[in-house]
Length: 452
Ligand code: NAD
Image 1 (cartoon, rainbow, N blue to C red):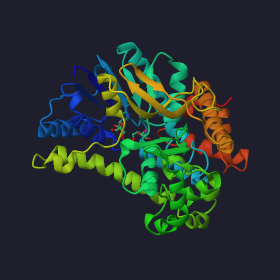
Image 2 (image 1 turned 60 degrees about the vertical axis):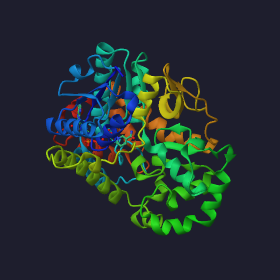
Image 3 (image 1 turned 90 degrees about the vertical axis):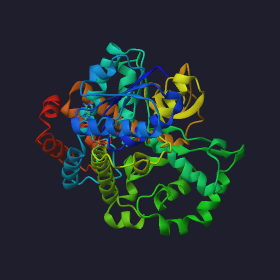
């Protein structure tokens, strides 16, 4: 296949191995050029070398290139995948420490105790804009698959600012539906499953689930009533279907999927996180969950480096030759080979795919993908009360954050912080923002958000 795929942030702890596996296992893409790009030379070389050796072991012919130069990476690209994180995990965590001292907890807004914190988003949004401009200049026909967070704010911003960019935001969180299906069905074949889980990224709810044409939501309800208690005893903390998500299901009649109610998606809603005792009661432990996540991504990057430099390691033992379940490479295959399939993507709500969400805001929806591109599909939307929470807790804060970012306004940034349910006074919000912007390393962001 004579196409070029450009990977920006190719050293990503969360995605490098999944992408390498999927690229090498997708025979339809054999012969394509894959260009790895990262600003960290060690991570870059490790990822590219792991990929080279993996492809060699599997006997797959891929043209693997690497570069530290983004423009060179984009030259002639047909697909661009972005998994870059500019301000890394250490900066995220030092901001969280300050936030916690100022009274912030998980369960509030995505903009503070979450990995889409505004002090991370600032650098991500700037990267997204400059990358979009480069794509439109260097490879304007390329498809841009944006995996880096924020999927929600970033996809919204880019679709408003660069309407000609061929883009979708992708998140693997929707995969939680497969666990729900397993609870409902036991063993099942994925290809016979169909579902609808409309919403916006990190706020999607399972409104329809059928298997071979049968509505199997009643079976899931039965699992909740009869078996979920036994599951809680084994599932550990902050689980996708632990006591808290099940409680939300009982309350709203539809199940939160993936990161919607988990720590990875901001730990919505705040009332399960009011204090440590309440969190314990609901089997929630955001701090431990995040520590585990950070350990994992750092371990992957370290292991990649070790394996890349150890020629005795058999790559197919290091990385089992199985598709990862990530959507990026299958989407590329569907477009490049005109293989129509349905994926879960993030697109602006131009056609009212999720009724009630503003049309210039990104929604997470099913889409038919084929040689002609990515075509969003209509959904029946969410129950009224969940639409209300979606507007209040996801859309309003992002509108304020985007306005603060685009206007460089410290005042609007403070208003964003005021929207978090843990803010009790303007004074608290200001003190937090002041301390955060004064952290070493945030000089550019401090200069950007001017006091007016
Ligand atoms: P990471 O720090 O392990 O990897 C990020 C990589 O980006 C690093 O190799 C870094 O050197 C590189 N990088 C930084 N600035 C760059 C730049 N300007 N150009 C090119 N490369 C650059 O981070 P991670 O944990 O792998 O997360 C990567 C991104 O994916 C984050 O935004 C994270 O929030 C997001 N994420 C998305 C999903 C999803 O399903 N959409 C899931 C998990 C993580």
